[in-house]
Image (cartoon, rainbow, N blue to C red; front, side, top):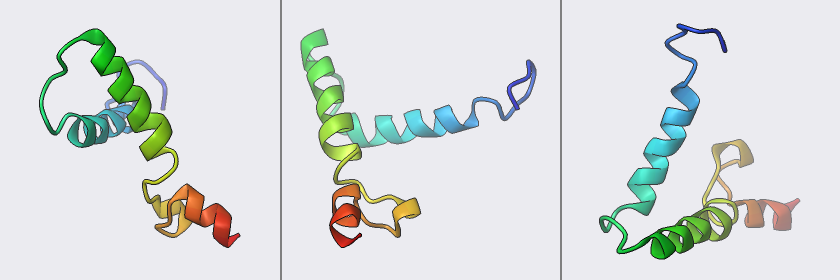
Length: 69
């Protein structure tokens, strides 16, 4: 799939960035670069990787999945 000219090569990342923009940028643009860095870090490390439900985990958050395992 990683060949030049393959229309589906970027589909996964485009989907990731689409969700990222929809969930993180609900309130509009950031006021400055530091605000953007802080919000992006908090979204990825404190929400997406810990509390957001994942279909691969039976629609449980990673924290709940680990507690139930």
